[in-house]
Length: 287
Image (cartoon, rainbow, N blue to C red; front, side, top):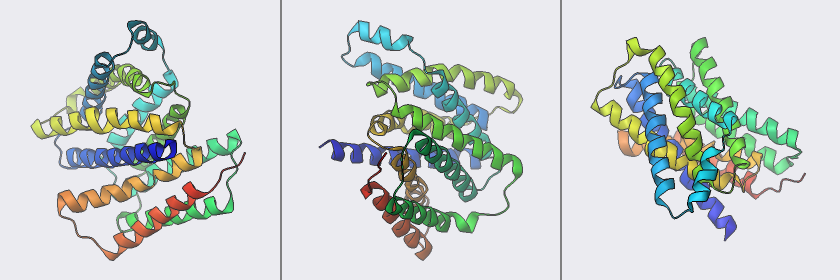
């Protein structure tokens, strides 16, 4: 049962991340909102929803008071850096190029941390990782071109930040909901300061507001709670590799919501990514 629960939590989190990517692309690429405002609305709406959930559930007041005073400032900073740099990077980067840079940085960050902590990756795990990575390259290759240096740098920083934030989640307290709520509440003021710095270019229409709020309240806030819960039972290798499925899920989301065609390349990438992830999850990771 614990294994099935971890699989279910991980699958839900990956779907939420893919949906979040689609919402961000829709809002920024259509100019419905500027990147600083999108980041601010995303974090503020996520904080409001998470705090409401924490207060509505049946937790003793002493527990609420105790969890509200703790702060993981590294996780808070990484959450803010990821959200902000991700939004600004997609202003100049094509979706495929951005996804490749982002998840490449995530892989390097989390795998490096895993090796440093004593994880040893067997041959089967490495083969699975390479297969999944190759599938990801096949999926995004048609959109890969020489990226703008600034956009590429911003997305790489966002990937490193998300990798560190994910690693912090593996050591979070037994209450992932409270941990995520704390991070959002403390990161929201940072985003508001960022928005003030770019106030001259701030704009948002009704669609932009709705997309940013959905991204913050649902696919970010609630999605990160589920991810934190799953991370406590995943090694760094497995946590890094399963995230390779997010661009694939987002691509199929584009097929369902944006009427994009299913191509043979997309099918090949699906087999490679899902097969590679299955190999990594099936492999043992000795210390």
